[in-house]
Image (cartoon, rainbow, N blue to C red; front, side, top):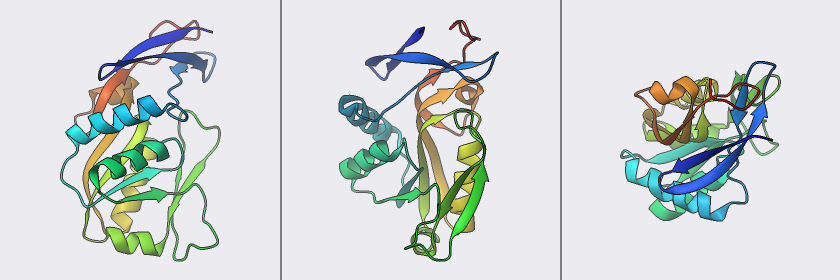
Length: 183
């Protein structure tokens, strides 16, 4: 399997290149289980963090990252879950189609988290921003809850997302052809 060497703010990793379709592949960035990477990325993203009251991330790959950012900074965090849980009431829901997930995904927050966000400055955190669909869904949830989007951050900006001026990120990640060469 081909791989892509990447330098994330001074920390090097090899990302396996995985096919999405007959014409497109992506570098698989998985932060789970890599404590050194998680701590490093959290520390580096905190250097870029705009002033805010809360951090929020979509479930699930961004959870260790947002936890570590919260632990280091003392800024509380919230999660948008993939489905409503029994303990949730007054659910806000947005459907999203992401490049790495087959089918439609749902992101939800409940009324309690919406109340926390109302009138507060919120920074959206994710591991990778690619098409921007998950980011748009998160923006919708924050806006519907009455929060103010103070920033958008990710470890990696994939493909065209690296050209966006509204995202702070640590490294760009290209998209690939099926043979592993950069598009």
